[in-house]
Image (cartoon, rainbow, N blue to C red; front, side):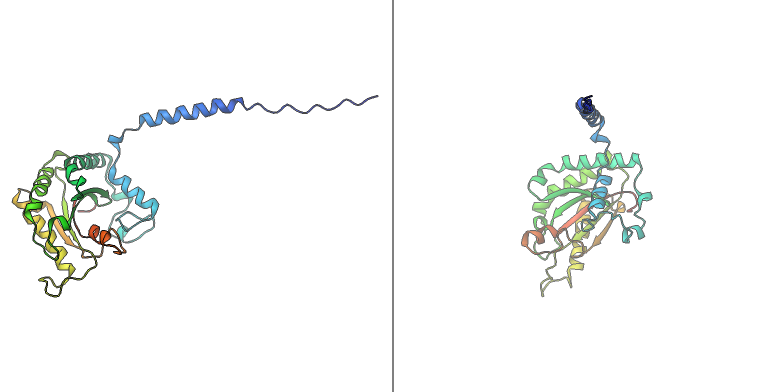
Length: 241
């Protein structure tokens, strides 16, 4: 008697995969539509990106404990949702207010865990080795900054002006003993001129960092050194007063 041949079990259908893929795509589109960039916190996003890349050169928060945690800049010190939204609105206001100057690279707007950073290119506003502002170049910029200080988006916030240099030593005949004094003098002079435009000096602090906090640590090209020579005007985030 002949044996019956065993039939191969039918292969499971994969038709469901097309439906499943369509469902996932629709869900992705749904959540993208729900995302509102107006509600995103630019400052916390910058800190998160720096944390993921573990890059502290730009001032980002490292995921590992360090000096920032020692200063109280930990998760519990991050701004509340309400404050975060306000600072996010202030960032957009800054970008729109200084758009023409950003195109000429005289001013750049960024954000990190300190807050909103308005960077003035030193070469556009100061003569080499000098702390005296070139008012022909700086007047319109400082006037725009003073107007921005009075905007509703930054009302009640505190500010810090930081002077930075590259790693080139000051000239032997300079009035400044080192880059420390030069960077601090530039920050102070920016504040004095802003005061002439009506800002409240009591809401400010100043600092000079010489070449200790460069954007480009290697200082290997003239372009990198030019980016490192700057004055940062910062809308301080909560926890950095």
